[in-house]
Image (cartoon, rainbow, N blue to C red; front, top):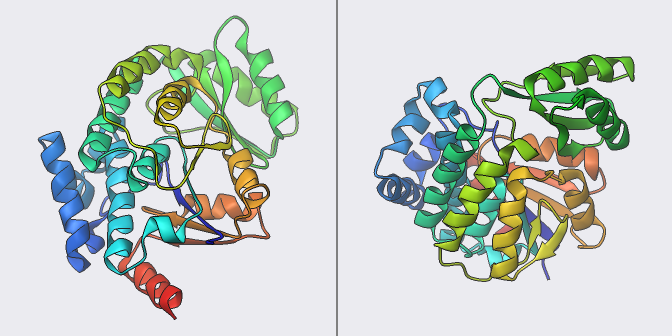
Length: 316
């Protein structure tokens, strides 16, 4: 039985040029990008390959783009005889990466995943007027201290923990004024650094409730299969496979905390995972994994060279 989990990156891992080398090297990757463009009725691949960066960074583009690169890697591995169901015990994804994980594991079709993520990106952007919400990383504080800082910073406005990314790396989200107060309070509590993040909306807090409702409606319309391996849900930090529960948890995920530290801890303790393999753009999750579970081996598969080395080792 495999002792690997495949993980899928979230927003912030996008970069102009993403997927271009995969498309040049592998027909399976090209086919994924063409299918996503067709599903969206727009050339997302052009924005991915050529930019401009401000277009790619738009949530409605970044989310399906990151999913497309992740699924392209999955399809290339599959074509090389490395099927997800045989080589991963679990899948997990950071925020939008949960959709990538579910698409990779067969819960959503590629076209549906692309359309869902565009809808999610648009709904999350629309939920709060630009400038009225913010997110900040509090570095060097534990989760309990970050929660206390967020609560104190609120003063009648929303300020909540949004992401528990790794020990000492907690993100808060909410109304701009409250998040700015949290920066000062975090420094007073001994944070090494506290900085605003370059995001366009306050994700993963209760201000996102309109987006959660939009996703509930969108997910209700989509055909979903049980994933071929369980997905470790962001909001539970535990594995699920039932499509009805997956649908419910994806709705909760819009306003809920991304429990990434706990998810990776579950995989490497309860789940018996010793290898964490990040599929897609960038290496953010591989860096976080080193801090959460230093005993596990971690690697990122995002370039043709990464994939070729992984295929050679896996088949050796």
